[in-house]
Each structure stands twice: as C-alpha cells, then as structure tokens.
Length: 511
Image 1 (cartoon, rainbow, N blue to C red):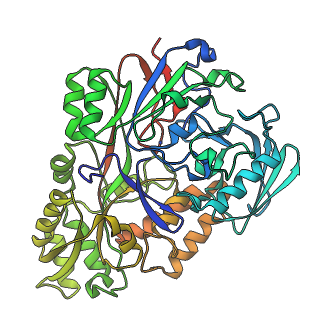
Image 2: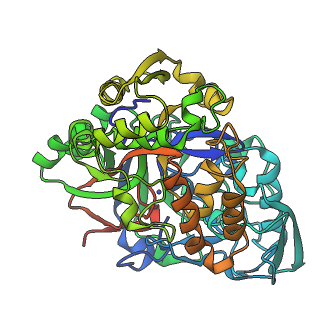
Image 3: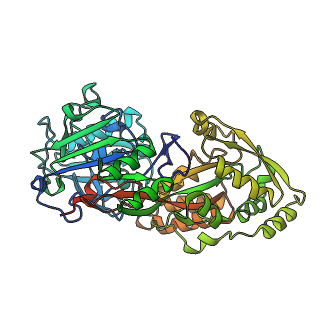
C-alpha cells in the first residue's frame, strides 16, 4: 500500500491493534430510489481492497463495506449524513444508565438459504462476531452478553456505557448472516445473508472481481437499484484511473496524483475530508524523549509547521489545514481549533527557550516507505526552529505493531476521523492503541468519563476532550485530506460522511 498522498488510507483501532484502511454508510432507500430491480442495468465499481472472507464477522470498516452490503444487511442503517435509521432493527432504546440496549427487529426477513431472521439469529450473529476475532472485533469490546427477549426483540448488555454502540451496529458488528451458515467454511467464499444481492460465483474471481445479482426475495425492493453489481479489485492507483477513464468502471477512488487525468476526461468529482494526517506526539511523559514531557516543546512543534504550504505541495491543495484531531462532521469539532497553532517559527523558538531548549535538541522519528516527501518537510521545518530530526527507516509490516509497543516517541500517520467516542477510544483513552504510553490526567479522565456516560450529549461533551488534547499538544495535525471519488454520467451518488467511498445504497442510475 502506498502512503503518498494517502487519501485512500487511514487507521482505525481493531481489537487492540491498528489497521490501515479507508473509511465509507447510507440510506437503504437511497437518493432517488427506483422500483427495485426494475431499474436494471449494471453498476460496476472499482475497489481499492479485496475481500478474503465473506464471513460477516470478518467484515472491515472502510473500503470493504459496499461489497459486504451487497449481501448482508446491518441491524441499523447509517444514512449518508451519519443519521442512524432502521434497517433490520426497527427501533432501539437504552435503559436509564445506557448499559442495556434493546432492539426491536423486523419480522418479514429471510436469509437466502431460507433461514428466518429473528432474535435468535441476531444473537447468533453478535455472539459469532464477539468470538471470531475479526478485523473490527473491537466494536464489540463493550458487549457483555446478548439475550433473546422474544422472537423479535434482543437485549444487548454492556460492561459499561458505550456511546458508539449503535454506530457499530450500522458497521461491521451489525452485519447479519444466516445462523445456519455462520462459522462454516462455505460462508467464507459463498456469503449467505439477507441483503439486496447474491454472489454470482460464475462471475467472481477472488482478488480480481466480485459479481452480484438481484436477490428476488429481498424485503426492501427500493434498495435494489441495479440489476447487477460488479466490484473490480484495483489496488493500483494507475489501474484505477485507467479503469474509470476508459469506462471499465462507473465509480472509483483516486488520489491527487491521478486526479488531473480524471478531470480532463470530464468525469464527476466528489470530494470530502475523512482522515487527518500529521504527527502523533506519543511520549508526553518523556519516557524515551524527555523533551516531549514539556507541553511547551509539543506546542513549539505545532507552531513549526507551515500547514498551508504542506497541503499545497504534498496534497495539491486537496484538503483543509487543521490543528485538531476531531472531524468537522462530529459534535466534538471546535472551528477555532483549526487555527490553534498558526505557522509561527519565532513563537516556536521562544517556547523551546522557555522550556530550556534554546539550543535545540535531537529526536528520532521513524520513516516508512513512500513518506519520504512528507518527512523531508517535517525534518526541514523542525530544523528551522532548532530541533534535529533523525529519520530512522522502519519496516512497514511492523509499523503498527511497533507503535502499539511504544517504540516511537513520535510517529507520522493518517487517521480516520470517526465519531467522538470512536476517536477517543482509538487515540486518547488510556487503553487506546494510539496512546501507547497510556498518557492521562485526572482532568482528562473526568472529561472522558463524562463523554462515556453522556448519552445524547456525548458528542458535545467531547469538545472538552478535544480542547484538552489540543491545548496540551498531544498531536501535531497538518491537514484533513480530501477523498477524491470519481464517477461517470451513468450513475449518481451521495457521499458518505466519515468514509472514503460511498455505501452501496448511495448509488443510483443517472436516469
């Protein structure tokens, strides 16, 4: 996988680890829904990643989501703007302390093998998801147990309040497969779900192409806006731009290096920010790099970066400069924090002097393949304020594991901007993979606890967490990068908030 310009990659926490991914959910009815399969025609999409197993517990947040959505419904639907809506669950409520989530389920759904979707099937799927240790198993971390209340009701009991649980049930944790097929070898290659389409084995070659045809017994005909859906696996950026320009695919994710070719071909360009890129200043207590224990040093690092120039040179201005790690589409976002550390090398030098480092210091930062241009700018701009950066080549294959093992005082990454509680759990909480030195304070922990138990106010309460980690300079973000999705005139699409590619539900025939 290439790290430059990295518009298609990000990181999410997965079962205590970090996984590089991009990020995409939508209305099952969709925009301009037609009368189901009567729309006919074929939707062909380019996919950055392959699917190696169709076991629903192995589904992964991001680029894989639309492929799984062809065959599996989720318990809850995430609309393009992030609103949660009914899907297989028609209603859901929490108890008073938000530790028991009750879901009412549809009673008119069957899987493609004839098995009935009911409370027992929902429990079987959630239990399987917790046991299978899939790439997004962390989404079920707070689930203690699932109980069948009656044929169309389940209770999900949590070990503690989890403000992201309903969001997770619209993602990998919410996919529902036939209980008769769960855990079998067959489901890895032949999915058995209740979704709008079924896999056509004759038109499928794993690693190359997945073909899906209409599920004639699907409960929501409005979601079947095409007669056939094809995903072509195109991991190479050049292959993707050639495919969309030549008409081999109707939609595909590109990056700034290939955007001009797509623009010149007259294709429709949809842009929206998903990830932030920058430095993570992990060692805030100075275990490896003593200088980082002083907040003034971390603030100086932030003031050292000319974010606008970096965005222009590294991302061709496809993005937005920022100094905060919470996304614009979340309630935790504070507009003025985007400019919290405006480029000011003189102020940076003053802060270093106040901290006792007027003569500067040296720090080692890992360098992974394809980030050479990024790290060259980092090295130069930190040198301008007196910090000498020693770039140490790090193997890509162990980069994430080394981060988790607290081997780096500072590291560069591209990080998914999810919902506030998702972001806190991946970057800020003491058990977060992106907080390998387990930094905390009484003030911060109190703010985190307030978010966890805040119910509907959790997102707004997360603003205090955002303010704290920005003031304390836990991170040095450069910018949010634009995802660049290109489509032809055969289709229309609605972008999905916080995701790199639209959900399958978000596509419609142009007519």
